[in-house]
Image (tube, rainbow, N blue to C red; front, side, top):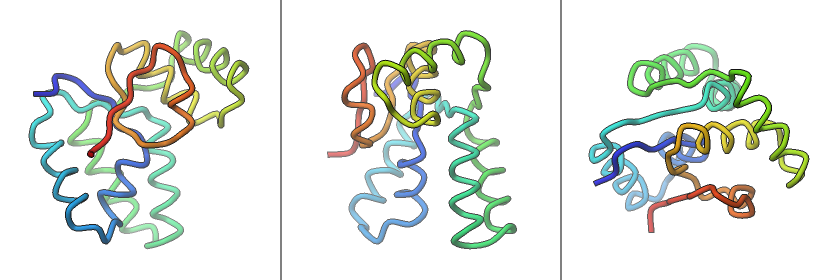
Length: 130
């Protein structure tokens, strides 16, 4: 059973928008089994922006508020900012991804994502539904 996991934006996009019923079932099961669900504040930013564009402000507010309620939100602090800058410089990945990866590393938990950017980062464990 997973103990603590940080969830990336990809998780929420698939959870909210996937038409693959089997994948959504697996994502729901993942959440049900997780003891501690963690999310970066940048994931909140990314998902809120995505939903604003696709479904409008009301739905975006509901979804980001639900994530805030059900997940421990980790804000960007000094340690995350510095680690993120180092990862971004070394791997030339988008800023949000570097912050999310740094958050997972500093929190000492695996990152739940299938985003290829994360596969190149050493000392970052990623998991996804198979």
